[in-house]
Length: 424
Ligand code: RNT
Ligand code: ZN
Image (cartoon, rainbow, N blue to C red; front, side, top):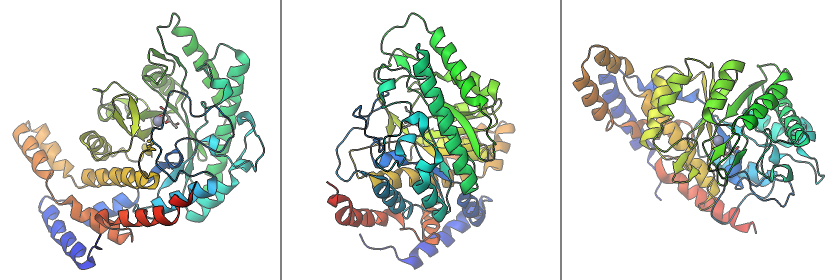
């Protein structure tokens, strides 16, 4: 594809700047604000949630990465190389979100309850060199001890304890990330526990989960290094009838125990909107983690698209100045397209959605709302949809020395030809 002419991009921006000034929006200030918002990029899109352990369990836990596009990262070096490539095509400084199965154990078998920060040296050094933060997740799936579908809520105490130890170890690894990198790590607990079919006792597993969480969090870690979050889900593949860690369960847990609540956009009934939950939840919890994905039918993890719900979410965050309290993470995995492109598409879309939200003259709209001027509110909301945010976005990319518009795709094609296609 032909390169974008620098002058045209700049001229477009100057025209857009005038158009936004008319409605009281300073695009230069918006650009400065957007630079300060990090997105936590999930490492697991790069290898279909496989990790580097040598279990033959495959991916379990009711999640699935479908597709067999060539070029999956097979080890930490390849994954980091792919993330480097993706991040070179995304404007701004972001974070990377790891799972415990991405430990580097030098060929030795180290079970998950025995993992330590030494197994993440490669990741820490890489992040330090890039000047980025890391986030973390215990992996409570794809393991022989999760094979019957239960982990922290398991009826067997030994199995429960194994997972408790793993979660404590994970929080400590998270704290070591925070300490080494100078930015707190969010360690997010998600478990797959649940039943395929109608349960008799819904209460006991939840009671056990609560007790396991209490034990996990009893180990005190400084908040400047590690922040804990808990993630709910409605159903998984094979846990269609009952999930122990439901929304109400974790909402209650987070409020009572002062934890971050993780809202994954794919973990609710299809007509429920996360965008409408943010303001409700923020009346009761201090901070939250967002797992932005895109639900389609049964799948909660399609690559993020610039759709209405994403825009509603970023508008919620911007309008209420929630950006300091809401940590933005991504959670999608698609094995049917170029995986590096998937990173670029999803992350650029979240940034575009944030930019569009930041370009809104919120005070003006709020005034109309309070004055009962609903005609103006609707009329302007609709008119603003065709304002030239694309010109501001292109300029933002240009400023960051990142390909403008669709020209990043050429770099992905080159990378595919020169690197990904050689992985067999
Ligand atoms: C699963 C959860 C969870 C995982 C990652 C891999 O439904 O969304 O966040 O996607 O931990
Ligand atoms: Zn998630």
